[in-house]
Length: 432
Ligand code: LLP
Image (cartoon, rainbow, N blue to C red; front, side, top):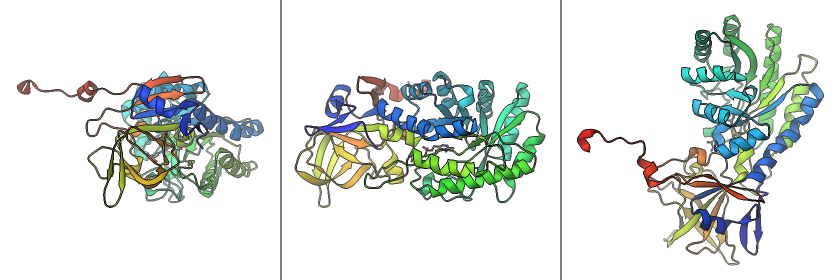
């Protein structure tokens, strides 16, 4: 949950800092990321899975899914805690390197890797490229050959497991574009091709079935299918060192629901893996959590600028918008919203941003404490896929960002300026 949030004398505090004061001091829209919450979320992974290495002597690696949030302060924080990186682009690899993530904790995902990205990964000696197709494998092998190097490859398989989540963030079903199908034999065929290639080394099997999973059973099914496949490979004479089960653990966007947490995930996954102890040498375990490490740490603060009554709703218009945080607009995602000044009187309101799109609405018909112009509004659980999906639509600069701990508040991203908005545009001579 959002353990960094407290309420004192009717005011919302983040790590003890008054949210309304932060909004005034740093201006809005403002992302506030809690360092304390991020550390807790990550340490819960370490704690929950630590028995695996103790029991088996194998490695357990957590590679943070950079796409969730690549703010440099956060990636450096996680790297310092011993966290690796799941990257999907040259940009994310660049950030992982600047964040001093050890190369053996970097895994490269994606269904359309580019040659330049592959080169950079090979130079960095990353732990594995997660191969998504035969064509991807061929490109990795060819690139390594040109460089006179060997590239480590793992194979992203598609286990055809229903993750029971939003269709736009489900990835491990037959109909999805990701991975190598197990059932039809394509996965095995691809791995056998790799065996014959001179410039790749087979190190692992990878899988990621989807994001915001709120049940454990799909993870159990996934783990079993992967481990069965590892056994099959062993019988074919192919030994797998690393099993990477991807990310996907959900967070409680809806505070009424109780959903599995890190220790439930660990219990379920590990008990399946242990069943295979007599059949194979157990592998190193890699996970790629994104959302469950940073989502609950983030709050987006906006200031109420206008209040408008219509025959159907009372609209609260805030200066944060869908360009700052797209999730409600594109997935109809639910995010808890609260006023930072809690008054005893309540009212039902709809909260919207100021962009010229009807989907620029953060929440409809929410019962909140009475709101006045200039109040600060907090949108919760935006630390993952918030700033990383922000854009400049309607020529709005991306928001500033601060990092809080009980001790201090640090600015970790400057607000974009008007000049930033046109800094990459070029006007040809005839229009000057
Ligand atoms: N590994 C792979 C290969 C992935 O594709 C993803 C997320 C992750 C790990 C991390 O998953 P997580 O632990 O964060 O669930 N923009 C969407 C989420 C897209 C997730 C894409 N892949 C959203 O805002 O809900």
